[in-house]
Amino acid sequence: MRSIRGGVGAIVLLVLLVNTSPATGQCGDGKIRPQDAIELHLRGEPLVDPNGKARALPQVSDQDKEKKKREETVVKANAEVALTMPSATQVAAPATASGGTEVTLPGIVSLLGLAQEQGLVNSKDGVTSISLTPFSFLALVRPEYVSDQELYMKASNLRRWGGTLAFGGKGESFDRDGDGEADQALETKDFNDIVTWEVKYQFGSRDRRTRENFDIFDNAIQEADLPVRMFPALAAAGFAADAALAGGKVDADGCALVSEMRKVLASPEMEDKLAALKKIDAEYTAVAKEAFKTVDAKPTLTLAVGGTEKTEGFGADKRSAALRGAFPWLGGTNAAELSWNEVESLLGLEDAVTWKLGYSYSRSFLKGSQLSKDGVTLAVAGSYEKLEDVPEAAHDTISKLNAKFSIPVTEGVEIPISVTWANHKDLITDEDEVQGHIGFTVDYSTIRDQILGRKK
Amino acid sequence: MAKTKDTDQDSIVPDGLSSLGAAAGIAAAKTPCEVMGENEILPHEISVKRTDQVSWRVYLCNTPARAVLGIADAMGHQKIIVNQAVPPPNPLTANVMPPPAPLGRYMLLWLLFPTGPDWQMVVEVAVNGVVLFRQYKSSKSTLPTTRGFLFMEVDS
Image (cartoon, rainbow over all chains, first blue to last red; front, side, top):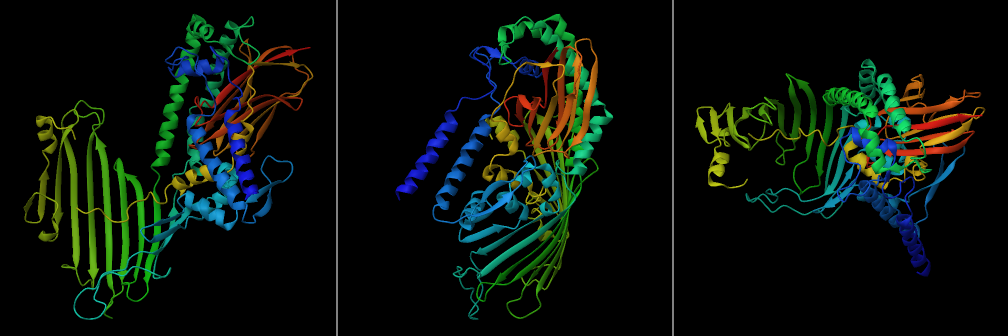
């Protein structure tokens, strides 16, 4: 017990030491690095904080500090586990190392603990679910597969796999004893009473780190000759600042007085050079944005297969398969899905089968116009379902088509309009007015709230 | 109209990374960049002799990037030494000044164009194998710039 306390105490001391160590590479009070001052100026940000003090520019942000704190918690938790669990070790050679570095792999208990910490293993309402994304587990054990780009690319196929496996939960309410009355759903007792699973594979990628998507960005900046054009612009600004700071105005730590830097940045010698650099920066931002827009809109296709296996008394087994696609078309976002679902018949009849084809489209118009700053969004969705041997279904086929859009009236006030068509009248349940197979809703609530002065 | 079930792509897009990034980031030991970046050395300039060997090195974490390195003088002469996509290699090392070099004041400049949303990078300048400059930058830095410069005074 004493050794455990001692170990924990040492960790706490270490954490305190880490937290109180002076930050390296920072300027003293009232000083700033010339390069940082130039970058802040280009971004239109002040060199001093609201209290008039020089902006300290720690390279580690608050977010990083929080992350560090969480890492230390995990490390501490692992250290405690290691007191009772023998750890496996292996030798891994980092890309930069001239020799091997011994790394400690967590034992299975701490691995599960980490997996739970990351949400890869969850337990809620009697259901324990495990992520079937293999790369997540690989990253947990071998984090260099995330940080090292070459390893990351090697595992690109592994990252396409995903899914979940869940155990437990509650069964279905149905007539178990044949008395004509539905019996209460049973709670699972054994681990395998109800097992739900899904496996997915994704074709296509929007990941900016893949070679293909990086090339889209890289080709775009090279076509605009940005890497080469930015170079002389930065050199000119840097040399102009350097000349203005000659004569010992930059100390041995590479820092200059904020007041001095202000004068330098405001000097006529710097003005045109900073303007030239700012122009290229803006061009780069635009080119990068366009390239990322192309990557973010790349089509993807996901194949998903799943099912639910139940022991007797918990309800019907289920199987499903789906093909889901997301792609840009007609200037908007499109999603399509073809799915198949089969539910076992508990009465020994034919299994219930549902085929479904779904499609949705959304697009914003008139964004930034006088009519509407945020634009007008049009959303169209349609689906067709074919049902075979589904006992509770009133129709063999279900077709629906819905369009929604909003008409902007004034700033922040719009009238949403929804129109739905269905191949059976009773399927239109979400609209205020129904005429034949068409339902119609005009929502005036935002105008009413505006008149009554209510906030949404 | 009821929403189409299971049309949500987020569970796997992009490439299982939405959860992965956080998972790895929190649970992982520090990245090589974070470890190297703990000891930044950020002088405005360094002094070197004509016969010194000056090398530049960049180490990238969590991203690919285009890396550009060059040298310039106050007269407006410039030379681009490196202009390539990395990795490979990682780290990327380049000889800035194989001896003998002409006397004068020079500026080393580097530009990096990463695509990974959680990029990290460490740039080092070494003279005869001794690191005299080390800068760590990341997407989470207070000033997340992906370029930098260092002045180099070459004397006899």
